[in-house]
Amino acid sequence: MHTNSHINPVIIASENGRAGAIAGMELLHRGGSAMDAAELAARVTEDDPEEHSVGFSGLPNLLGQVELDASLMNGRTLESGAVAGVQDYGNVISLARKVMEELPHVLLMGRGAERFAGEMGQKPADQRSFASLERWRKRFEETGVELTGEELRHLVTRLTVPMHLRDRVPHGTVNFLVRDSHGDLASAVSTSGLGWKYPGRVGDSPIIGAGNYCDNRYGAVACTGSGELAIRVSTARSLILYMKMGMDLAAAGQECLAEIEQLSPRPGQYMNIVAMTPDGQHAGFSTTAGKRYLYYTGEMAEPQMGERMTSEPV
Ligand code: GLY
Image (tube, rainbow, N blue to C red):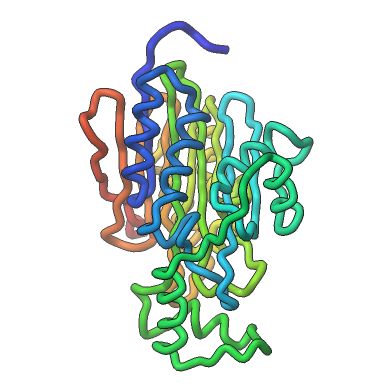
């Protein structure tokens, strides 16, 4: 239920969410809802040709096709919508919202999602940019593997988890956690997923409970990084559950990092988490030192970066 009190709006995002957060905050200042601001913020990121982990110009799969995943969740109603493996449509966050609003489903994938995009009036467009295709081609050259069209399973490990290039493993994704002036929360996640993934690979971003979760009573959580890790331990919903059971934000995040580290991540795999409580406390967590996240509250002139916490020594 809404109250009339004016609550300070907040947007928490992954490091690449600056332009989206600015657009989302403008909307919140005009009285927009958390859901509308989260969707708008993700759309702005999806349309950015310089951003190679989300939407247009996202990194292709092994075959050179851009396959997009996204999800969105309403913290007041716990409704959610998601799409996975979408080709030829760029604003997958809006498609995820349409799934939530127009269908009795949560998650649509591949051809069905593309058909639905057409029904919803979205215009098909090639999501590959010259820059993203160049990066795709160069990766084959660097690694010295040839794409023969057969036995892709032998290529996927060499291209996506290069032991000698740990800091260049091509993950990315954008996260937005939003609180509006009514105190409602929403979360949005959009990605082109792991670069050079096996065709059809789906990460954590469209999996409600893994890469995205939001509940007005306890908070909002979203992930970037190696989605396989967040899927295996349901990171987003777990962090919310730990807070529901009484942990504070920092302790809940540390527990999630410990669960991920117990999986013995493969070389190059990592996980980043952003989280926010209903009263606007926020934190970022990462299995890698030196990672940052973005926060932007209604009285700030512009978004600021905060350090993500890493695991505490046991
Ligand atoms: N976190 C994005 C992905 O793994 O696809």
